[in-house]
Image (cartoon, rainbow, N blue to C red; front, side, top):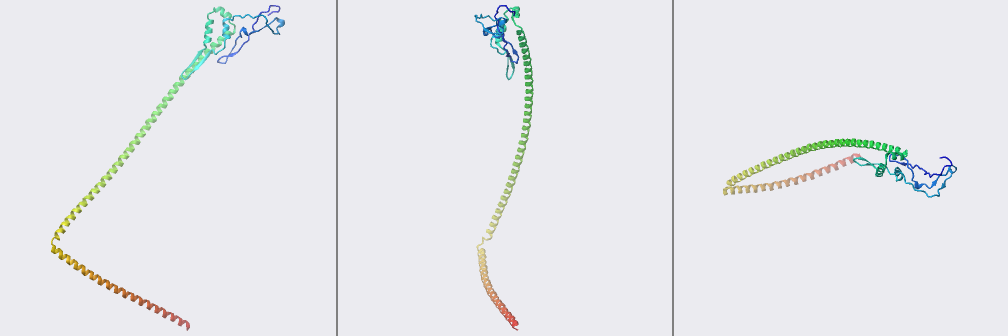
Length: 289
């Protein structure tokens, strides 16, 4: 600006940098209401003085509405367990719709140079996010296929183990059943053997009783004659009496023999004592001589 010219009202354009979702910085222009100072002529360029005249509120351009509102992320990525989605900001879509109502030539002429660059960056971000979204979907699909394969293999392994375990259990049950059957047959054979032995024993006892009864009948027939029985009984009593007398005589004779034996023992002891006394006397005499 040349010296000596008028004092136009200049808005201090401040670039406010805000980070996009991907970390890129975007520039924004502060609204006119935030300006309360003016720049004077070249002689007062280094001095800032307050502007005393009333400020006129200028209507912002349509494209400036994009920068007056509070900045929000233009693109939001929403991810869940099954899918990944990208959501555009509704304010951005509405602003773009409002801008599209103006004439194309006037719109392009009124836009500053940063706006096309900003749109280019936004389109580039959308393309990158779209590519990233496609890659994430591809990775998710591959991961899903891989997980299905792993789960299918695990299911097959579990079914194989179950079949093997079931076969092993069936073999064990058959083996145990066979052992129980053999044990039962062995016990049955033992019981049958014991039953046969008991039956044979009872038959022998029955035969013995039959023979005893037959002998008793024969003996009963032989002693039917009372006379023969009485004579035999008397003869037996006589034999018993004579046997008792002989036993008494034998006891008396044994007592006599025992008495004689005691007498002989006493005589023998007396003779031994006399012999010992005689030997002692002989020894004493021998010592005296």
